[in-house]
Every structure is written in structure tokens, then in C-alpha cells.
Length: 93
Image (tube, rainbow, N blue to C red; front, side, top):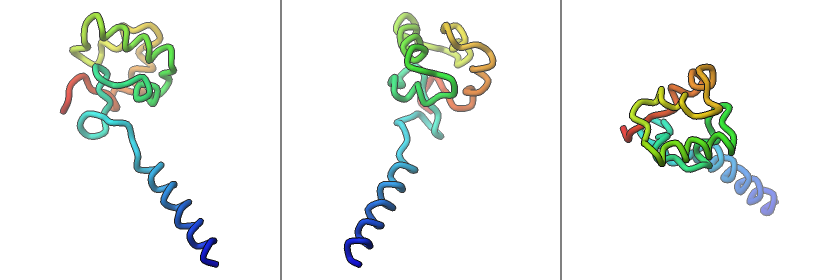
């Protein structure tokens, strides 16, 4: 009985950790597209590894001043931008 109880507590603790762990983001849960890691960027809707790499390369040339500039990155169109616009920021808030 003791092993089952400990196992159950362990599983619950792991699930709670997984539910509440989020990437490090700027204010109110938004991802700063100027500083986010590749791992953070791929949490955005429709953004895979290649698109995340393109975002990182793009911002090396010139940081994003407005989040709408994200649509200048190949693979990010209006539709994909609209799905993510409330999840992103370009500065720490």
C-alpha cells in the first residue's frame, strides 16, 4: 500500500509540474520574438523548427520593432500571424 501511495504522489507531482511549467516569456505569458529560444518559438501555432530558425536569423539582422514584422519571415503569413499575435511580443512588458 505504501509503494502505491508514493507512486501515485510521484505521478501527480510530475503531472502538476508538466502542467505549470512554461517557457520563460515576457509579461503575461507572451513570447518575446526578439529573445525567445528555438524551443520557445516552436510552441507557437504552426511554427516548426525551420520557421523558428528563420525567425532567429531574421532578428539577427534587425530586431523586430513591431510584432507584425513577423510576417516578413518566410513561412509566417497573415493567417499564422493572426493565430499567434496575442501570444507574442517584441519587448519585455
